[in-house]
Each structure stands twice: as C-alpha cells, then as structure tokens.
Image (cartoon, rainbow, N blue to C red; front, top):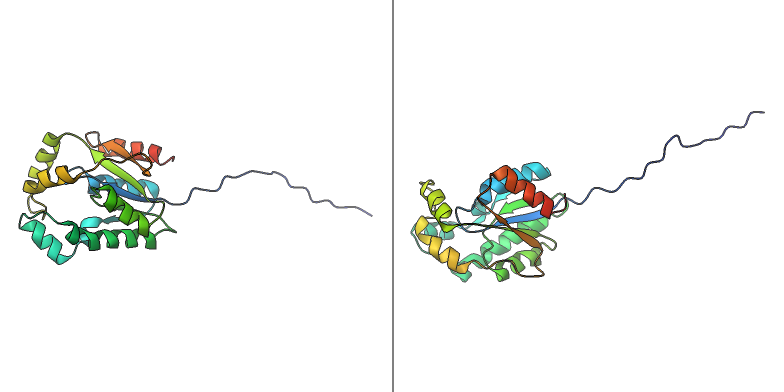
Length: 182
C-alpha cells in the first residue's frame, strides 16, 4: 500500500496590506490642496473629494462676496467633511479641506479617528501668484490674509505632516506617501 503525504510546496509569509488611509490635504487657498489631493488619491488607489464641494450654498455665497467665514459658518462644513471621511473608513479617502486650525482638525478627527492631516505650506508670493491664476473661483485672493492669520501649524501629537507646496505635485505626493509609511 502506498502512503500519500501532503506537503506544502512553498510556504510564504505575507504581511497584510495596510488599511487604506483617510487623508485630509489642508492649507490655505492656492496651496495646491485639490491638485495634490487628487494625485495622492490616485497614487493610493482611493477616492478623492474636494472639500469645497461640501460647502453650503450660503458659505460659497459669503466667500464669493469677499467675506471670511466665521467659526459658526465653518463648523457644519467641518462636521460634513469628518462624517464623509468616517463613511469611507473601510476603503480610504482623500479630501482637500483647509483644516486651518487645530480645533477644526480635532472636529474632523472626532468623526474620522485615525485621519492623517497634511498641511501644505510655503511662501505667500507663490500663493498670491496662484490665486491670481484662478479667475472665477469663489474664494477671492482678498481672503488670503484672513486664512494666513487663521492657519495653525500641526502641533506635536497631531497625526500628520507639514509639506512644502513649491515642489512639483508628483514630488509632493511622494513626500506624503513617505510620511504615511507607504
């Protein structure tokens, strides 16, 4: 009688793929949030949402008229951004959203724990030039000062990275992927 034995031909250890990330690409107007965010999402294989599309009509009208948003204006929008990220926790998502203050980032994080914040930073002159090349956008260049005054850098303990916006978008995406550990 012949005895048959089953032996595995090869054993391989695999490391599970990291969970798809939730990322907010933040910064002031003109920093490249939408451009970098959409390219980052493509590189990560996750959807991209421009946070501007989540603003209420009243917020867009207010900014179009050259008026800065107040915290009362921003809070429902930030909650929507956070909730949208939370709804994509399983599959990952990149959202372009200014997320200028730590408390705004904390509000988003309360809806989407584990979200990674990228804050794009760089020279004012570059921002002014970029904003001048965006005719028809609802966010006028005249509101840059209020955004710069509101911007708070990431603090120790915040899950994220500050990345300069003057490099080519593909290079910025590579820097973000490195910061994400990918």
